[in-house]
Image (cartoon, rainbow, N blue to C red; front, side, top):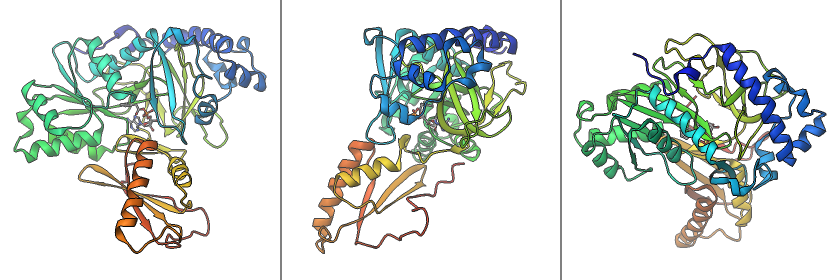
Length: 434
Ligand code: DLL
């Protein structure tokens, strides 16, 4: 028997889903127009009023929102309701110093957790399961989202958070965890660590994993499935829309169903903004249909993917997205953390370094390496190793405080980083994740 968390809506016909979306969008646009002056202003500039939006077909008339808008409106400018109605924030890094701060009412949290619950049930989860959540807890949405989803399903939840692999393995083995939730690179690392300790895949009770928050390949999936003896499911989401669970994989493992009763998806040409037909590759844009705290309309995710309405054998009818196939901006995800070169540049300038640098990212033994080569100014350059090390340490701390993760800093002599004749090559990503 097939299992769903909310069968009726997850298997509703296209017409039924459209009807729900059409009803919600009319209300939602009116709500945003009345409550978010920042967006009202954008609508007025574009000459659109709430009366122009009668169905989701009219969404294309609305203005886009981007990370730049989030930065400009930071922190409260896109809030949809009084702060007293909000119960939580979550946050992630933004393009420069300013982070994205998303606000949630209790209703928003319930909706988000239900989306995660759908993902857990699609991966075979039920009240019988022990769900080990080793996404980060705190400001990152991964831990809280899957934790809440697991509670809704009624599974026993192990709120591990990330890191401390010895403890992860101890709980996994002693408490018979059956579903593992973490980034795919951490899942691969756990698999390796189990093997190093002499465990075979059959020694654990895991049956499924729910992995996302960063790009991963089919090869990686096969490796994880083999090393842990599980079926590995992809899960997608972003802080701006809620967090994990915007889309999730079912047993077919051929793309992720988008929770269309809550999020309306469009694919656009990233250069022209034109909406592209189903099946074409472009940038994914989301409109949240019923969020109260942070109700973004037409948010440009910068993730490049393809949508498909091909019938799915799992019985779910919601549109599917491919894995993100790339980004239309320069955001990297390193050890699960979103990193923009502009953030690195901002730290260098603040610390008095010239913006001559190169970022090198690689993956060694399933863990990301993160190195930044920075040119010293002549007055700072020294023959004394301890002087240079002290400066590297200071820069490492400044980077860590901006990014949330610490790169290995290599200060190099002035004029040694190759000058390019065209666009500077700032990032060398050797991971080949797409
Ligand atoms: O990464 C939310 C999340 C947590 C998703 C746990 C899945 C599991 P942010 O930190 O705001 O939110 O980063 C969002 O991460 O725009 C994508 O570029 C990338 N991303 C998220 N899921 C996937 C995935 C969380 N399954 C950004 N595959 C998004 C590839 C993903 N990239």
